[in-house]
Length: 296
Image (cartoon, rainbow, N blue to C red; front, side):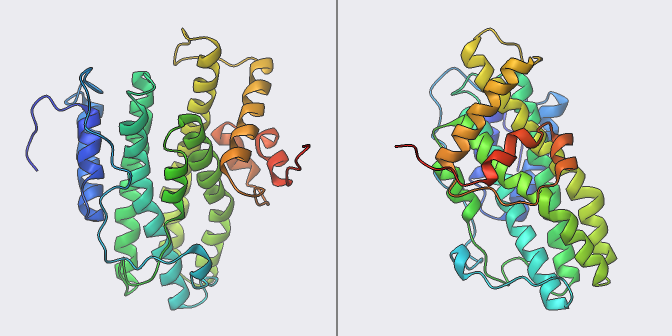
C-alpha cells in the first residue's frame, strides 16, 4: 500500500483495523509502527472530527467460530494433533491481539487526550503482536496445518466490546487479566512442547512471545495507574511516580473495575515472578481469586 501523505497515527490504526486478511493486517501494522517510531508519522490525531472506530474490525470468514464452551480440548502437546491445536489457538489469540492494540489507539487515544508515550507503548505492543502472529502462523504451517483449519472462539473481542466505552476497564480486563493469564499458563505450555519433543515451538514461545507479553502487561498496568491518578491530578505527567498511598487507591480501583467487567474470580495459580516484572504484585490479583459476595 502506498504512502498516504500527512496520515495521522489514528488514521493509520483505522486502516489496520479495516484490513481483513490477518497476514496483511500484521504486515501493515508493522509498517505503520515503523513509521511512527521513526517519526515518518508524526501526529497522533487531528483536532477535526474523526472516522468512527468499527465495533468489530474487519476479519476473514475462513475461521469457524464457536462458543468457548464448544471448543474442542487442546490436549497437552503430546501428539502432533494436540500441538497443531495449541499453536492454532495461539495464532488466533495473536490475531485478535493485533486488533486490540490498534483499537485502543484509535478508540481511546484522542478521546482520552492521552500523552504521546501512550501511543508509542501500544504501537510497540501492536508490532510485537503482529510479529507473534506471523511467526506462530509460519510454525503452524511447518506442523502441517494452517490458520483457519480448526475452530476458534472470539472471547477476547467480546471483552473488547464490553469495555469499548471505558479505557480503565479495557486496560484492566484485556491487559491485566487476559494477558496476565497468558503469562500464568505459558510456562506450562512451553514445558509441554519440550516434553513432546517440539523444541522449535517451545523456543519460539520462550524466547520471543513470553518476554514480550510481560511488557504488554506492564503497559496495561502503567496506563491503568496513569488514568486513575490523572483523574485526581489532571496535570499528571506521563513520567509519573506512585506513592504507597496512591498505589493502594489504584489497586482498590482495579479490584472494583475487574469485578464490574469480568465474570467470576481470577483463576490461580499465578505466575508471580512474571507479574511482578510487569509491575503488579499479589495484592493486585490475589483478592480477585476469591468470589466477591454482595453485601446488599
